[in-house]
Amino acid sequence: MSRVINESDWRLFRKLEPIALDRFCERVLSEINQISSDSNKTSHQRYVAIFKLLERRDRELADAFNDLRRSTAWRQLALIQSHGLLTEKEMADFTAETRGVIELLNRLAAANYRPLWAQHGSGQGAFFAPPLCASFKRGRGCRAHFAATN
Image (tube, rainbow, N blue to C red; front, side, top):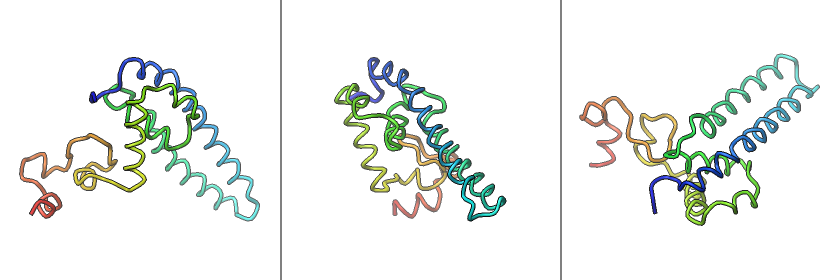
């Protein structure tokens, strides 16, 4: 198994990404419409709810869609798929290798798996990223890394 998505899957992913992005945005706009039309809440309560929703959805959008690269395509495709933004037919067009990686990543995410380096310092918990805490960068480790290894 290679460490990056193959060329044919990369081209397919680039073709499906704008479709998935549009579906994501439509879903968010629908949620905003639902919140804004809730007459049981004050205008301020609706405003705060929409603001919080947009903050959360903006992070999700950024994780799944920003800065597409072949090296991060599997992680981003897994995020897109976990939001239910691609149909089964669209997913079936990917190679068995890519479908297997996406399934594995989504199973790990569903099990709340986070490697140690993702639990401390990186903030985003991205797959396949190096440790990012300042102590670790300086080569001294940090208490969380030290405690876990001793």
